[in-house]
Image 1 (cartoon, rainbow, N blue to C red):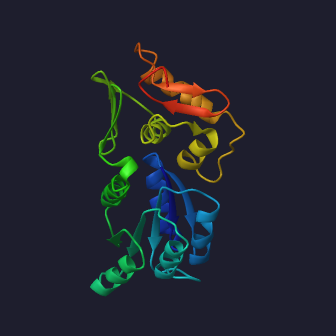
Image 2 (image 1 turned 120 degrees about the vertical axis):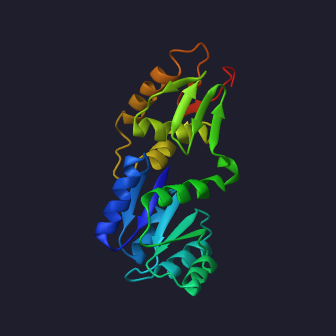
Length: 226
């Protein structure tokens, strides 16, 4: 999952981005409202964490502008103000949820998971492809009741594949959602992670789930004929 964090206080921005990265998210950071408006035009985000108090343009204006442009990406607004009217303004501008500073990082993660589950294509806490099961809350992965140990990036890659079962995902699509803007798509990093995933979730089992679509990308599905 790729997240845009919009926060002008660098200490807080670093805290959020570091924490999200440790949980397998790909994170880009904008430090003012103008940057925040420009970012979605050059990158495809699964979620936006948007502070209300920003230089150049405040979060309310940023949110309203993005919605007017047709952006449907879930937006979680952050603010140090706890007044009901501020929450109402944020939600009326198009935000999907609201979190008041200071907040527990565990709650931030829970709200991101909840927002993700609102999307019809990704509904549900448990993702299944054949006998492969991924729990997005506990981050546990298992197959045929066997627990599978994945690195943070392997987990993020598998979650993205499982949220789009039976679909061909190009290397560019994978890079945009699992890695951040600094990722060099010319490297073979994606292929290496796919190979590592196959070693863990496919090699011990007779039915292979991750398939290469020659000249296109990768697809996860339980049927070999697809």
